[in-house]
Image 1 (tube, one colour):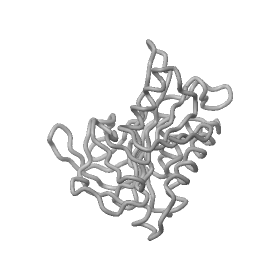
Image 2 (tube, rainbow, N blue to C red):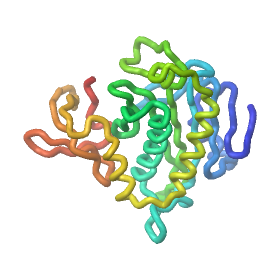
Image 3 (cartoon, rainbow, N blue to C red):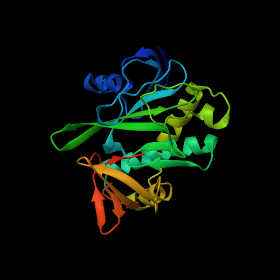
Length: 249
């Protein structure tokens, strides 16, 4: 393990999110602190899925945030859970767009896509004390130099595959960490954040296929609402919470 201020490199860890959450529980975590794993043996994805990552080739990083230290803008209320999720997704989008170009998009709620392939994902786990939102543990996985993936993964892609270049995963993770801290301190309003999120939304104004309760249906993505719900339209306008529908790719 090597430490550089608020950025720590771990050689091997089960899950960076679990490690970061343990630091929170042990009272050792500091707002803005990040842990990067060279090897993650039990990475966590959305909805209980695993996040597999080849040793030394990708970004597997978690950082801890105290929501009480984040404000939406001067004089505005503390950042909401969706506002935080959007800020994280936009920061990861900004990093990937810099190196992979304009075809990077944010797939609701917070995956990063290049064309129709997944380049990264975000998992946010929260710690509450009663109703008070005390900590957010933000896990970010980005495919950097990996070119061979499990056949169980439908559509992965890495920066190396997109660009043909090899990157230093640690340097990219440090750049992302700095972007996150900068953007979370920028004081953008929820309205500004939502506008930017929707500007870069995957498949916006396009027909997509979803599955809900085992039934497939086609609908057009309209936007994501201020509450973080996906709004679509077909015969009627619909709103979906995260986990309510599954993308059919």
